[in-house]
Structures are given as C-alpha cells and as structure tokens.
Length: 124
Image 1 (cartoon, rainbow, N blue to C red):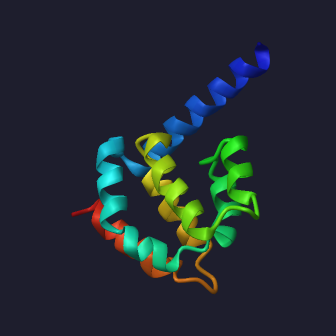
Image 2 (image 1 turned 90 degrees about the vertical axis):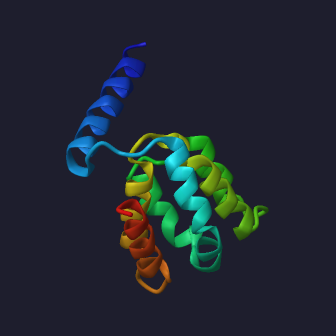
C-alpha cells in the first residue's frame, strides 16, 4: 500500500515537473488529431526498437505495454499502431514527451525530421 502511494506521489511530481517545462499540454483528442494527421510519416520512419529505451526512460509505457512492444511476434506496423493508440491516453504532455523520445533516438533513424514535424504541429 505504501509503495502504491509513493508511486502515485512520484507520478504527480513528474506531471508537475513536465507541466512546468512544457506548458499546459493538450487534451487526448488534440494529441490524437496531430498523431493521426502524421500517421503516414510516423509509419514510414518510426523505429520502435530505437525508440523503446527512450519511451521507458520518459515513463511513457507500463510494464505490460513495454512487454507487448518487445514481443518478436508483433510486427513493426502493429507496434506503431499500438503506440499511436496508447500515447494520447498518457496525459496532457505525452505528445511532447514522445517528441523528446524521437529527438533522443534520432541517430541513424528518420526520427529527427518527424520530431520537427510534430513539434511544428504542436504550435500551429
């Protein structure tokens, strides 16, 4: 019970820190709209294997989600669709955190341009 309370407090503190850094954030439907508008680009360039450690570091995945994405039986398009479906439900700053993950995993991938496109969409 105490561990649960500590996790809850930890998540709340993280949310407060993210809000201070990234501003008020976006609703899940606003995030869904941006992600679906860029779905083709995302499917074209996203490398889930390269992105995964960054998603974990930014605490954007539960253990179950992480395990699902690590299964060899899952195809890359399935993993991407799963991420696109899951991310908007991760809070008001999930898209901003996702962009940070893309920037962190840009080496040898097309993630840098994708991150820039999504960042532009946030401000338009």
